[in-house]
Amino acid sequence: MIAAPGLCAVTIVNLIRLPLPWWLGVPLTIYWIVVAVLLIMDNREPSRTLTWLFVLLLLPVVGLVFFVFFGRDWKIITARRRTTAHLMELVADEMQPIYERNAAATERFERTFQGSAAMGIATTIEKENGAHVLPAATLEIFTTGAEKFARLKQDLAAAQRFIHVEYFIWERDELTAEITALLLDRLAAGVEVRIMYDYVGCISFKKDELKRLAAAGAVVSADVTTAMKLNYRNHRKMVVIDGDVGYTGGMNMGQEYIDGGSRFATWRDTHLRYTGQAVAELQKLFAMRWFEDEHVDLLRDEYMPAPDGSGGDGVLTQTVAHTVEDPWEACRRAHMTAIAGAQHSVRIQSPYFVPDEAMFETLINAAQRGVDVSLLMTGQVDKRLPFWAAQTYYAPFLEAGGRIHLYEAGFFHAKTIAVDSLFGAVGTMNMDVRSLRLHKELMVWIYDEAKALEMERTFERDLEHSREVTRADLETVSAGARFRNSFARLFSAQI
Image (spheres, helix red, strand yellow):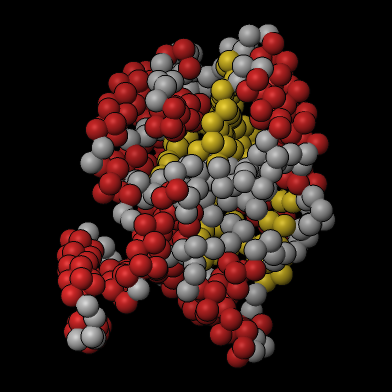
């Protein structure tokens, strides 16, 4: 840590001594000073600061381009905007009455989970994200695309007032054709339809269906379209129908999420459908993105669940979300709080495993203190770089007592966690650096023992189609493959 700044200073001095014309040397010197001061004042992690200092000082032009696209601190930039404060005021004003009328759900949660790790999770989410515990009148966990989309089609066909759709990927295939036909029918019946998709996530797919919907009266918006933010994705998947029904989880809009498509024999994923007061949190998140992108206020009573007099009955849930602009990275911290507080077991499902240092240390600590920490990830690869990078984490994780399983029946895309057979979460966040720090993500925490046991039983069934990674497996990896894996890890924030 001492040598690096010294080396950087020496490099700058040597560059300044180069026989550069004054009209080039002076601006370069000013550039170096300004860059160093601004980066240091950002108070980032020292390793990140030093990395960017080297890039920007040694490659003034190319480095600056990389920094603009990949290195800016959007947390600081966003906090300075007036629209951010205004949006937070709108959210607080609309959500407060919903939280107040569901106070009985919070009281039941505190009685039920006093002394468990769930209390820490709920407190973390409330402080960092502002979201309270809310009851779902019904909650279903789907583990196949066939189940999820069959039910979604029924709900879309029954929509009476509005349909709000947000997907990272909207493909162009058999499924999207059916969904488009349903939405066109609802538009003809006077139902409001709004669709948001991620610009980069959908860049390779034809947009003729979305254009047809727009021509018929739907409001269609591409998210994250500014050049400086193309490295950051809206990775969320959610649907809100009439303020009564909500969907979220790992499945995007595409036929491959049902049958595996042309690449895989099957596709294993997890998605939620729930009703009741908890749907307010999904509508809140949709409205926040719509306000930021389209400057239209959808944080109004007519879009929220109506009071139902449930008295806090139902499945207790709490939705946590984060973006690259979020100062707390709330989804990530909720996971870390849950893992750190686990007493017996942690079951994690994620297609990728490229955690940041803090998350990895939290997993290691839990495993070393005797918690049964098991990870199930994909064994069939859609992207080689993250799969290679993941292998660099295997050895220390196994050494600490963790267990890793590779799903081999098809592609594995579920994003879930179950803790101590008491509670768990389903959502969109992978256990990789991009999801943990850069993407717009959400997770729905479910504080319900029966649902937690259901998730654990699903985990056990998935193990029947999986192969456990052993230390003997690691000993067979060649030196060349180890270098390849370590090299891939260098790009973990970009893959």
